[in-house]
Image (cartoon, rainbow, N blue to C red; front, side, top):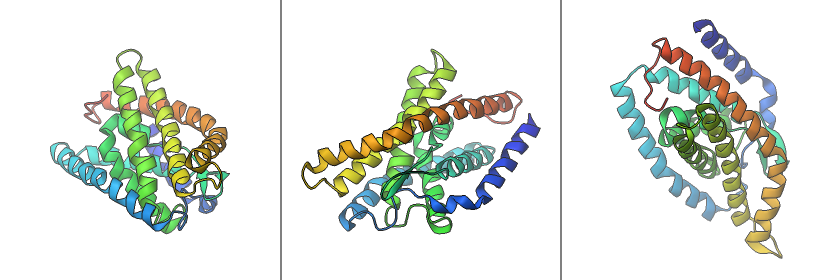
Length: 240
């Protein structure tokens, strides 16, 4: 089992260093008007603060969680860096936040997502600083909450199905929120926000549905590895 963990970490390192990531992005720098930039920063900030507080308490209670949280954050980094061109000013990609929401709850993922998005914006030209609040809200707040409650509702019926749907639905909801963010910021000249929302969602759906399914399957595999390692005494997790 430890060999598989080390192999996974090595794969993560290789994928992070792959150069083609530099051509993708979330909602890109400068694509949102200033009022929306301020709004999304203000909305996201309380979730990040609450997440930092929860992480601090959790790490003090169980320091061994730090390594797992770092691994989950690396998982988010990799999946959210796998870009597919979607519409002007944005791309489609898996999010990876469903796994962390299952293991730690939704609030810590606001911190994990912030770290990932900040590094991607500064080092890989993915997303941007002005759009950081909007990207954090869609990928690291809205999506994880859907993943968390989906898993909590379904885990006692079929755990693998619960993990799959949590990851897939969290991914899809991220792009529903992203479509709403873009629609409000750039309403259609004729049909307004509603028409713009339909356009963004219809375009995103073409690439996002298969990505969500793939992310769900991958999350089940990684979850099983973590559960097996936990059973060997590697971690103590309340949500598993």
